[in-house]
Length: 571
Image (cartoon, rainbow, N blue to C red; front, side, top):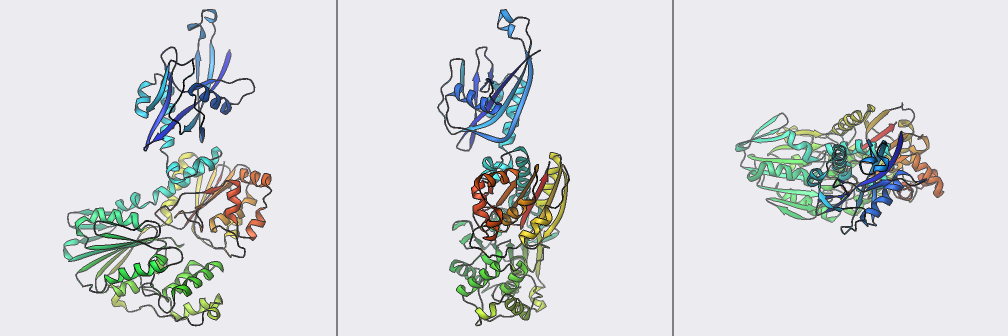
């Protein structure tokens, strides 16, 4: 039996958030995609690009990695050629997904007609079921969370295993977006508000204030504002990423992270202005998320310049988040339960998104509405441990409120942890066909050491998942965050058929990158470029290493934060 091989593309372009596909009508009146037979010694991808350019006249065509579909069928050329009437050919056509920014096209002489059509119009034009099926698969692929989450997806999805790993990671990030989980746990029926297991009669309160701070502040506040509507008296949203704006009764304030600036102090003073005439009949709802320690911070016993210097030193020396936040609590007017004291005697509900290993409410955002069990002496010991007492002898620590009365009317509700993301990733990995294990939700330790441990052993067709927050001891002058450093340290242990992703769920890994993806191709690229991983690790310069190999992950600020997510996959 004679065989024939062809290749083509599902070609699309986007305009004003709408997607259009390019279809061609052949001489027999059948609509399909640009395609043609492979020439001698030509690969499928090469043929697909050549044929698409020849049949459309378009020059700027980009292949989307991760999508490769094929169809098989018999056809009889004798139906159109009397000399080959009895000949039967088995044909295989491979299709790739391709994108162009060009709109104007020029059809080849072989085509009867062609043009750009919406997805629905394309489905109507396609006569053959296998074509309609491939188009539907392309549309599903392009609607994947990967393309929405990862801004450089087409650059980093260099092979099928990478694509699968990114699909799993995207599922985790999508699951923790406030708009995807908050409506499930916060509901309103008439004048009753339901927060998980809590039922609140809104009519019992004369005034309702909403204060949101941290990396999920804007998205969370907009959802609760939509639910509470007219019930909100006033509110502030302290956001490290959003521009200054006002929506209904909410005022959005620009703040900075991880090191507060003067804008943070001004925002903090605005928040505390609401507490000046707070009354017993008031309800205050706090939306607290990772990054809240810096977002809402009013220094006490320390100047802003000194505070920034202290925090930079603690990060550089590899202090844990618990140690850093204990220092913050005893140098602030609003941390370590102080915010609850300021808004006493109002009723307080704090909805908390955890970004710390172990989900200790007193550590998340430095526990502004949680009774603090750390002490003044403990803060001083940490200060001495990292030799900051000699550099900043003038610092005056203060004790956090311990009186029970300030916390009797406070409800601190944990609404999201990295477990949500890890379970979503596990489900997706299993759907794809991997045996999956969540190894730890609270991984800690120095990034390089953790990298060596988690890449020691993995079975075939297995996916291992980790959540938590590592640390980096900064010795060099390079650029990069703990996730990039972990990925770079893991590179040495990776074998063929393995891929590792380490990323910050907030999208900011001490740089504009969220993290990195590494595999054998990373090793190959590094070798070709003459890059030595150990040299970049010694200079803490993982960002520039991965910038050169093309393995940085970019998401931009995600609008959420549940610490870091690590995925280790073997086919």
